[in-house]
Length: 385
Image (cartoon, rainbow, N blue to C red; front, top):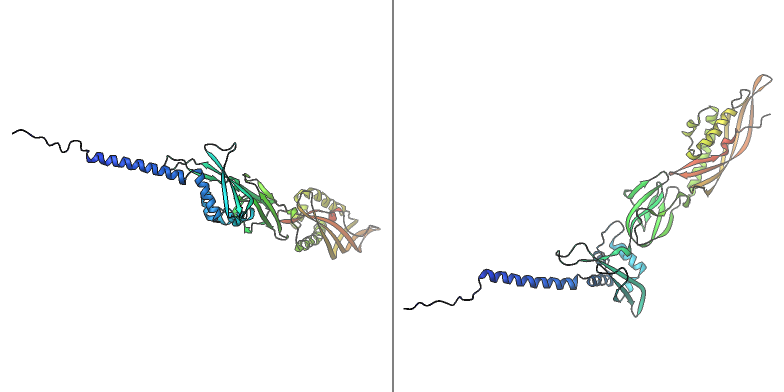
């Protein structure tokens, strides 16, 4: 019998080959699908479409997410919504148009799109130029990833300087002491971080002063930690209690000066009881020591003085160094006793009188200081006979 060959398996593909071929086809299809998905949903224009959809839906939380913003003290969806309502009144927009914008800053890595909005049948004066940039991170290590650049909306590294000890409120938000970054002798800096550009309201509260309120404008740039607003004590108006405090200070200081002078105490001892501004201490020290020397004559010197009535009138002004200042005119009624040697015999002479003094107080380092006073200009008692 002849031999017969079974040719039924000729040309068959093995199972492993079929498997890898199928996997290869699926991989190609998957790649094509991802490529199409990326083009449709992750290209620069698609990212802007997503932004506009959230914008037209008036959804600040979606906008915040699309813009890849990191929430911080002032960068919040609520503040973004507030800003857009103030600058654009975006709740009135009903439709939009979008066109690519070509300029010297665009290219393969940067794309810009100009957006125009309609309020019913009227075009809004508000327009936007949205910038999208190619991210350093790729999608699946193969495809470009695009992100909206929020630089045109953000002011970075915002710092505000206020008087030492003051409380800061920005856009009705109390800034906690944890945001303090620097404290000097006269002022302190609050670091607010990043904020939306545009108009903001500042309020400064300082014990004994009326609240200082003002508006400031932030540009979309980095301020590098330099104060964008600086409020000095000189810009703040003391409240009614400040005049009373300064009156009380000078009305206590005058008797202290004379008490220390009669006891021949040092100027440094006087400083423990009277707050004299450091910048003028040397001059007032010399005047005080001259008072002691003038009262050293054993045959004619003041031995006692009492103050029967002290009345002060306070007016406010600004000092040369831009700190808040008070001019104080103080009228005192006094009774003084002077020891005088007449014909070799000491006798006590008593005199009653009235004297007017002028003083200047400065507010610095969260307290009031005697800057100058003619209390130190000479000894107060009746003219020598």
